[in-house]
Image (cartoon, rainbow, N blue to C red; front, top):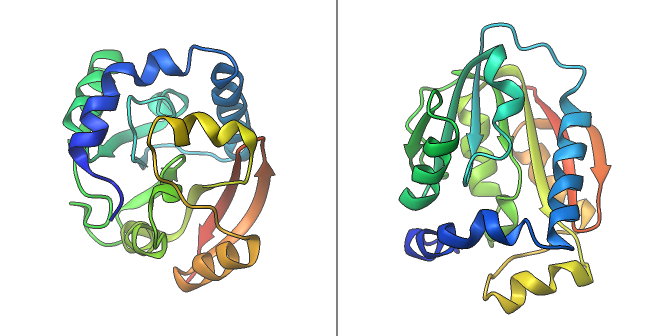
Length: 196
């Protein structure tokens, strides 16, 4: 596994600051905009929702009014920063390949900015599928080849780029059917539905 807690604990100190610097600020804005567009038609009344690899909690605020929300991350420091921003959300430190939730317990799962850090993204996808209810919605993202990914490389972050046909196979193997795709400068986001 590429994700190591201590590396993300160190990066947590600078994580939010980094995304306030151009051009990364525009990249983060684009990621949020794509995400909100993908989920805009969904209704989450009293839903159980989980942001996997939540970092400092950037993708959680959209859903706070709509149900019971959890955030999970491997980094204790990222979780601490997320709790400071969103004290009413339940954050847990967890390995995304072994989440402490019951089978078929979640109505919505987001995995934005996560899967590109796994050499085998099928593992966290399968785990998300395990905890997702049948017909649950899941948003996933994959990195694209882009010059804008250069800062991550310079920062020493290892990440993987998946071709579209590989993404489609990974989703199918995890019982996820893609509904809608959004392509950004450095990321592709996909709204999926779990179908057994």
